Image (tube, rainbow, N blue to C red; front, top):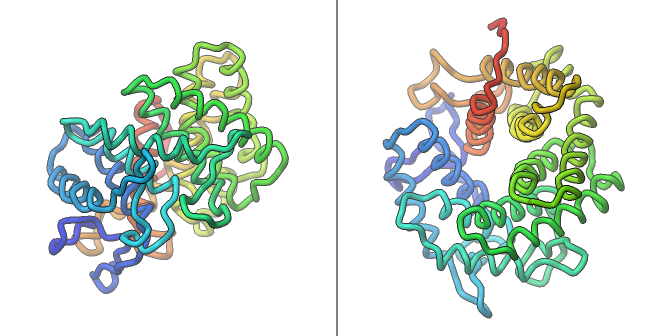
Length: 330
């Protein structure tokens, strides 16, 4: 997925034509730098470090200062600058090879903090326009703040995520404002953030609330038949949805596995169903040289996107870290 001319990732690759397709999807472009950093660190491999460095230099030019905080410039992005752009830039900088760019990270975090309303929700865009994408972008902002808290220990970051979790639990999830189509994606980003919140908070009541929230989200996805449908009808599945489901469920499992009830076993069985699907989907032989190792949109659609590959890689990493063992039929 690395374009040899730019040294950066392309968003879309069409194996049948063996060509890249350039699309304006800056949030995923920035997020994929973070994906590659995590994968490189996990595998302890260095061959993608030049791509990381080139990409960070490129997006450095998008940063602008405004009223005591940093954001990515809307004109350079070609789209309205949001907390999601800032969140993924923070995550990319937090996981970049040293030296750590603490000033930039703090300045981006300050921008997200200033976007938080008194009720705990975040205003999505830095410009004066209606919110859109709250189901994803709020969780991404929470995750970035909590990762920053883990490294920089600014208590405001943890408190902001704590207030935000309370809002999106009470006013989004429990009120049924998350549609069935978006629940998997909502649960993924909320779970990644809330697992960190669970681990960093010393307040027992917050731990209990986070635990309940995570379990209710993932129990709901399971009860609606998501994973049984993956098992019975793999040809109907969209790969990014399965990969995102596994990311979030792995974080819930990491908390649930200490429980002596059926939930850890139930979660593990569902994770294994999703992993089997992804292993069947991955191009391991045949195809073009660029295609091998990647993940198509579905079992019948070979086109590869960097966000699908990033979510799938993260799902595998989390499953290894959770020591998930499965009996596969592939």
